[in-house]
Length: 85
Image (tube, rainbow, N blue to C red; front, side):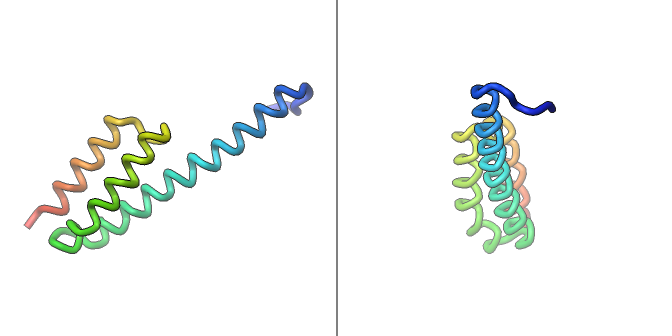
């Protein structure tokens, strides 16, 4: 990518960098919550962590980081795993 010359392209670059940082932070938050639940495996400990994961995933959907269907699929799969006996 070339050097930004006009004011509007400089502003666009600043906006893009800021948005990329926010998106990365949100994705990282989702992944870390997911790791916590997966580390617990299945059972009551994993089930106790699910509401926090759901909240983080839903927040990521609202912010446009995750697609709603991708989030639904993720929540479905992790719930299924947490409830296995």
